[in-house]
Amino acid sequence: MNDQISQMVPDPWQSLFHLLILPLSWIPEMQQALIGFVLSPTNSWLAGIYYLLLLFPALLWIGAVWCTHLTLYTLPFRSGRIELLKTLLLAWWDMAVCMWMYWVGLARFVMIVFGWFFTLGRLALKLFAETMKQLVILPFKMTGQMTQSYFQPGVPWIAFLLLIFWCLLESTIFTYTLMPTITEVLAGMTGSDASVMTGTILYLFLSLLIMGSFACIQVLADSIKNHEYRYLVQVLLVEVFVMIFEVMFLYRELVDAITPWIAQQTGEQFRLGIGFTLSLATFSWVGVRGMTWFLFGQYGTPPLLSFISRRPMYQVAAESTTSQLPATAPVVWWRAPLDDFKREVGWLHDKASELMEYLMLPVLHVVAAFLNFAIILVTGKQIFSIPFKSLKEVVEARELLPAVRWETKKVPS
Image 1 (tube, rainbow, N blue to C red):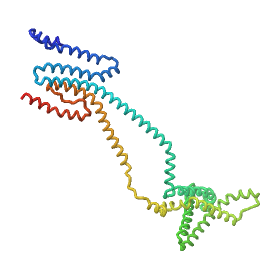
Image 2 (image 1 turned 120 degrees about the horizontal axis):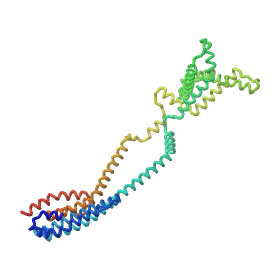
Image 3 (image 1 turned 180 degrees about the horizontal axis):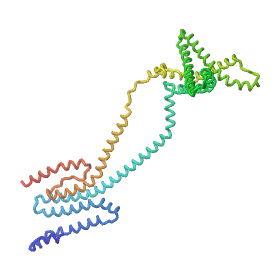
Image 4 (image 1 turned 90 degrees about the vertical axis):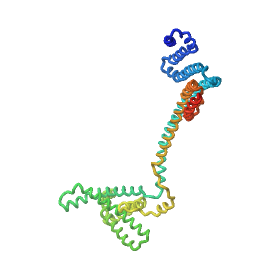
């Protein structure tokens, strides 16, 4: 490049030109050798490491050498030469600090990134372990919550479901035992076979009758509990009629179904009479109704009646317990997840800004050192105070540039 430039200079000035550029003649060769060393690796990984660690320091070195030599050329034409040399030496010191800060900043950035990955890995592992733990203890927790909620006052769903199941079971049994009799009666009345819907209609009819039987027992129990003696005789008569109806048409058929078995076991010597049959049916009705009533009927019948009438259940214990509980403000279910999302987004923004600062500061140190050399060449002063502690200092230092330009215009006047 020197030969090409020298060919552009007239021959009488060749000697003076070579004398003037003699201090700069070694810089292009040094520059070419240094850039060639940085760009020499052929391996992609090694080339990436060279570019990352050596490219910016090499460019800073080349720029500092050029600016320093060009500044020295201007010494005869400047005032305050001693201060200029001091500033130039201080810029070289800042350049060394910037190179060191560049490598240290890259190392800190890599350590922080690896630390983040390690922390996120630990967090993911902890979340996975906690998820597995919650899956293991979930059945026990659900059982505990169900038990706790079950013992709190409220609708006795277990008794209600057991009552419905028992009514359907009795309906099934009595439909099976009454079906031959009903079919025979309907055939005698209509003169034709019974319809296929006879069993379904009979099943629904018996289900309502059995539920009504439990309702009558509930009314009788409420009359006795509330001391309503005016209606007690009426309710007792209704309950007696209900018992007679179920004994005559339901439980008697059940007893008749087991009569052949009794006769077989006694060798045809014992035959059930009408009195013994009705007595056995009555005892069966009282026993079945008593067992089911004391087990779940007395708890499941009030919810059944409330469901049919669409009226709330009156529970003194539940109301007294509820009145003693402190009033709690309604909880908005989506507010907590939304607040967590806002906090996480804010945290991501803060950490992204911090990571960007860690990545930019090493490069900005190198750029600031080069700009110091360039500004010293132009104005004889450096603008940046190195090293930077944050991006805020870089922005504040940039605001000083108009003041430097104003001072350069003021000096000649």
